[in-house]
Image 1 (cartoon, rainbow, N blue to C red):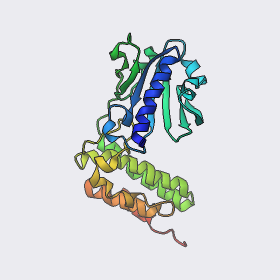
Image 2: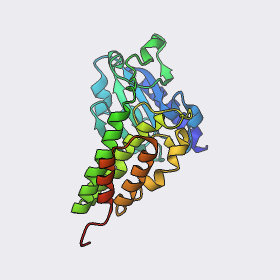
Image 3: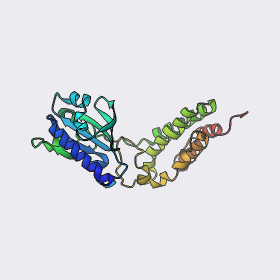
Image 4: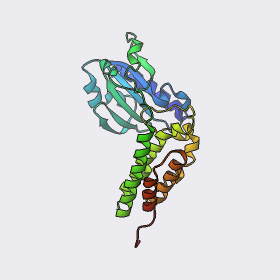
Length: 257
């Protein structure tokens, strides 16, 4: 069995195990094993919600017998109050949450695919109602955050705080550039993740993606990364000349070094 077939089969098995467990209501698959099956590949994980009867949620979180019934589990840990990350012994990785029906009305999640549901379940119950709407793009704020993150990061690099510097420049500032990209190039439809702007950026924003190797050059090359980000921002936005000069000054080697 190839990997993608294994993933889908494993989901069906989990649905059957949830049904046999006695208090299951539905199994909702998300992401690449949900409604976005066209991007399912051998590197996909199993993301899902197990919906259970009122009053039984904690039992399904505390005791994973409904999953060990499917196959041996090599590792698991509870990463949120609602669920776990889990690795089956055969390498299938899962990230899941357990909810009672009333909870689904209060949380934001992307539409999923119903793998299994009890016959008496209203299908609308399994559709998101509290969807997350992305805020309108505030170019001034995003640009200001990008520039000030560059400045802070470069100062920390000079101080010798190279890890923090890399996070500010090659992490936080790049995050702001990703948000600004929508004002620079049309986005290619590629299943945009409403919760994480870096997902599938290479497919969604190929023009910006071509610059990413210069934006993220590594632990010892934060100044070079910062300068590349600044040049990119300066080419597309109205960068304050005083802030530009201050950032470029910090990109130069510190005196005496």
